[in-house]
Image (cartoon, rainbow, N blue to C red; front, top):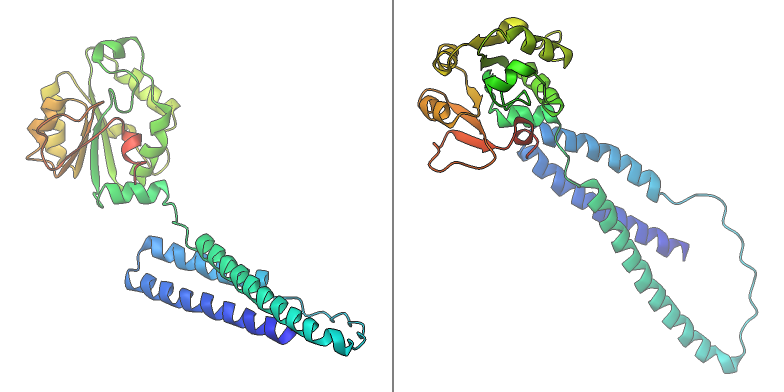
Length: 270
């Protein structure tokens, strides 16, 4: 019985090994950042699975010697034992198959990408990004509201910091009077001006929308983020990609214009 269990265990290992061989072969054909993470996780999981499934090698308990059955009951006993062995074998194989499938399902669950990986993928390796402040970075949506206060959306800070790791980021806005200091103070309090990230010199202000559009044209970014559909339309032929922040997708947008309800929502979709 011990030899039979060992043989079943070896068959289980062979099945898992064959499955791993196929998966590893597929991973090396399309090697990227996700595949590298999957290979590392796979190596760890194989070692863990081997230790989990390894049977203990301690001394087996000696079974007491049974008395020989009488001739009258030998035939029925042999037939009963045969049925028990067949049933036990079927249950054992089913249990092993189920256990193998469970292990495989756990090993090959999809790896969730990090926010940094999503940002790089979404930006298509773009190196320069321009973005307006009102309605995207700030809670306020008009210059009139900005005269009263400037409030940074807390949910967008993490995304901005990730963008500054891979891209040259410029923020810009139209102001009516002298709200620039108020805006800079709000950005600083939110922790956006960090070492190696966004600097104050890259936050630009203008008195008109035409001036803000001119900033974008001069900087020639790979991506521009805006809430004004007219500016998005004007810049469509000059900018490689644009992100229009809007509660609904406008009709007739250009092929290089994406639409999202917020900046953070765009970078949290896979």
